[in-house]
Image (cartoon, rainbow, N blue to C red; front, side, top):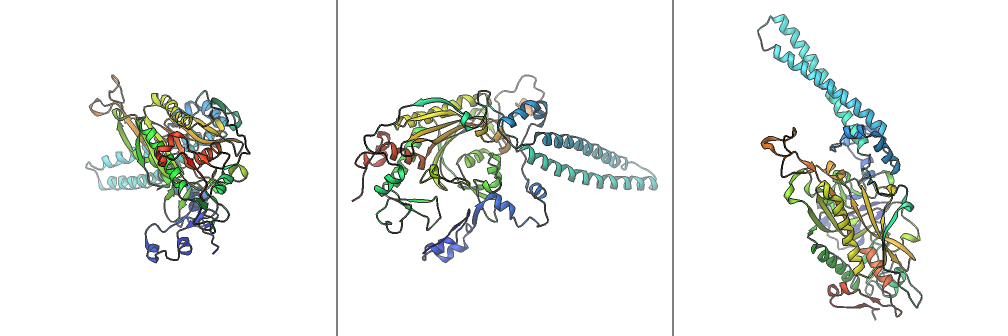
Length: 515
């Protein structure tokens, strides 16, 4: 039976009824029955939005959270911020932000002036006076109150516009980051060498078909025998099932990665895979038009996560941490969902770029002066693990245009994939400094207050400061499966299992054809 449960990027749980006749009808009444589609599309079709509402008005109406952006610093460092925006090829409009900030600052002063006049009138009315004078004060107070209400409404709208524009400004950039596009990225380290084969090399698609590890074409016929098989009839393209050895291999990768990272003092987590759209935005993943990578839930403010970075980043949202708790190190397992809008071509075929995959993510909250140290620690953990698997890879210091808005600096790891005859990205590690914490409201209170600090709070407590956040991919399962299949293929078609993974594969050393 031919079905299309994935129309564009909209997924409906009602497709389960079509795919599985025994699917209980009672499930349709459960609270998770929602339609999933890109967040941008959900925003464009929000029922709360009137057809006559303009796009700008709609954006302002949706703005319900504020980032703690240091507008004074931006104004005082206008030239550096403008250069950073150019270097990142960002579409942020700094001039507009500064204009809105000046208007907001002046309007705020006007609001405070009118509020003061209203209070003065109220105080005058407390004394004894003639009725005519009291009546004049009542009228004056009424006019001031109405004017103040109008000014405060204008101030709120202006603040929303200011926030929307300012939130587009990317993080500042580390001085050692190469300037330019992806081709300008610099190689920090090259590890190992490409394996040499005495037989024709196959890519992971061919290896998977021969070993019955997956099948993107004839899934229905090979359902019983295949380990991997296509899911286009159930979910659409770029989805897949895992069976038998493929399940063991994924679990081995996940469990081995967790055990290795936990040895470095990281706390393991599993995370929600649905989060509020505001948390996605606060982490710096701004949905943009039809090319958004985010799936949203229709008639809801929730989204499917594209990385565990998002729910882990929100773990301490709107809180003040004790300095003694820092650094907080987490390693999180989750499934990830991405629309992969615009991704096509032979370079993205097979498992290389899919809509759903498993991933293990590292995340650190730390003091500002420690973030560069922990950035180096994260990339070393990645390099140590990939080296222990015997992979040939390179670590790149990514160029300014390839950083994304949150990252101050980003290191990518690309591993050699013989079947694809190229290096492919398998990991990244980013230092986001205080970009995310200013949006998520995550601060820490230093243990000791500075001497004679004018900003010290009651009890001589030090004022809270924003933490720095860092994230790094420990294991993106589909990419790692590609690396293992293509680098460890044997002439007889079998796949050797790297030594570190064997205890997690029941002691097995090879994946071979099923008879």
